[in-house]
Each structure stands twice: as C-alpha cells, then as structure tokens.
Image 1 (tube, rainbow, N blue to C red):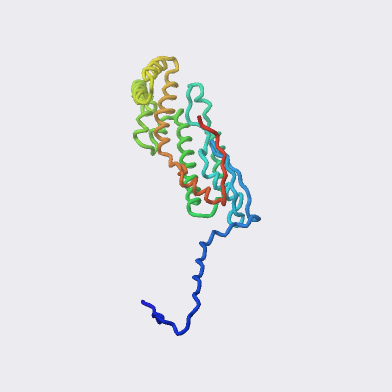
Image 2 (cartoon, rainbow, N blue to C red):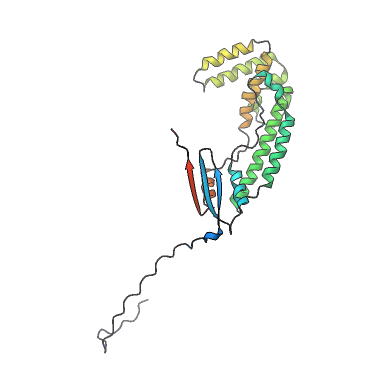
Length: 254
C-alpha cells in the first residue's frame, strides 16, 4: 500500500528531523556469574573444563550423561589365547560384574532430553546383549552344543559344529578354514598356517582348537551381533553444548 505524500512546498519551513538511530542487534543475555559452576572430565587424549549454568543442570546430571558417552561396559572376557586359561573363564565373575554394572547404568540420571534418554536405553540394550553373548560363550567351552542350539546366526555356528559333534575330522576342517580366513588379513599369512600345523599335532590339540574356533571364529562372529551404543561425534558436540564455555588441553600426537 502506498502512503500519502506530503506537499512539495510546505507553508512554513519545517526543521529536518535526524533519522532515528537503528537499534543494535540484541546480544545474548550473559549468564550471571554466580549461577555458573565448573565441571572437569577427561577423554583418552584430552582433559576438559566446562562452565555450566546451575539453573539448568546439576553436576550429577552432567557427570552421568558423560558416563553414558564412555566406552565399554563389561570387562569379563569370553575368550583366551592359551588352552590353560580356559579353566579361568568364570560365569560367576561375569554374573557379579553384570549385576554391578546393570545397577550402575540403571541408576544414571542424565540431563533431561530425548537424546540422552535414548542413549541410556541403548546402553542397557548393549549391556544385556553383551552379557548374554559372553555367558553363552563361556559355557560353550564345556558344552559346545549350547552354541549350536542358540539363536545366533548359522554362519557363527559353522565354527563350532565339529566341537558340538565331537568329530575330530570336522574340528580340524573347521579350524583349517578359520586359518584360511585369518590369512586374508594377515601380513605374514604363512605364520598362521605354521602355527596351526604345530598346534593341531600337539597332545592337547583339542584345547587349541577350542581357543581358535570358539575364541576367534565363533566369538568374532557373534560379537558383531551385539547392538552397540557407540556415541556419535554429534553426541559429543551436543554434550559440550550443554556448557556455557568449554576449555580443553590435549596431548600432542607425533
């Protein structure tokens, strides 16, 4: 819509009005210093110092959120590298660790928000997957039929069918096939064949076969089915955005 025009020749000279100054862009309202607190945390290569608004989050919420961003959950192993260590694998040790870690993760109180609730849900899912897989594998050394009769992929079971059937020729054939697979990703493939031939003729060759077929063949296969809650780079950035200011000190990498 056009506005009405003023007369070209005014009846009396009017003073020229100076244009009103443009208002400056509004800067974000700074957070009052007395509501800021400091939190420290670490990664593999860096230490961080963050200043956060205590009106929005508590130290526990931020600490628990960072806890969810960290790596592994269970440290109890389901694999060994030497036959004599098979007897050291313990379901009791696993059960005790799982109970402790489960209670810890369930008790975490992350910063409110859908991304962090979802991360906690996925973390619990990963923990339960890891526990079930580890427990079954430990039991499988004494009873490999448990592995064959499980719900894990058929491709994983091919490594242990000979052990479950207690069929020496099947065990050796599966073991040799595993070695061929490993040779594809090894810079000295002939060394793997030499070790296989040495271990396959040892008096305790059956235990060596268990180490290889369960610990490397079966485990590497079923481990890939664990639904990992590995955080993304975006989630780490979202975490830092919870703070008013973040400073970091990182080690130099040669």
